Image (cartoon, rainbow over all chains, first blue to last red; front, top):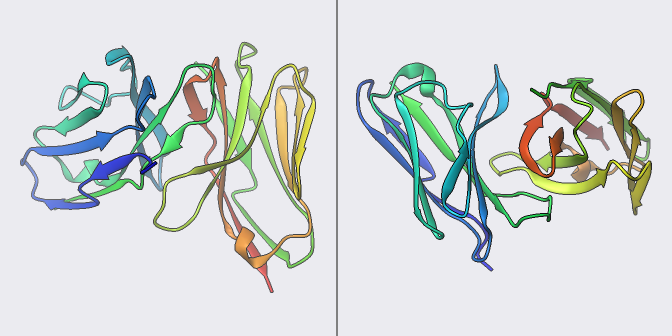
Length: 113
Length: 111
């Protein structure tokens, strides 16, 4: 089992550019979560999906952020346009219903200049 | 919504000593309380969890206690080792979803 896969691992971009982060959950998992981690705000839940359907996106900071899950094995988090305050480590996690434990990917470190 | 507070933010102990990290939560409906360990450059990894129908759970050197009345839970690590050095996060959720994390505790175990 490869675990949760995220790409890219590092992204450096300039303010105003579009950024797309990608996640492949563990096969068979039906929940997928996107988190953002910063020193100031800690680990924040942005959005989560169940069976590819967004369930709660109340953590998405603003309209510049969007997330999709077109199928059970792929999800994207898009920021357009990006701003320096979006610099953070973004984690994707997955789990199965009633399991409890969320399995985190290695994260994408985003730097917006 | 749920609010989780975690203390202390940093903790330094001598190898072999015990370490205790405490968390409080606000939503009485929360019923799942995991603890995650995050090493540098990696994602958080579950080390132990407890559900609201249990007061205490132990796994080798790690134990977690839950007081539902007071809405607080604690992580206890005994006989600490240098490889226990990491950032530890507590979390709370209702039925495993919408998990809210504490701010984290940076534990340093000095050899």
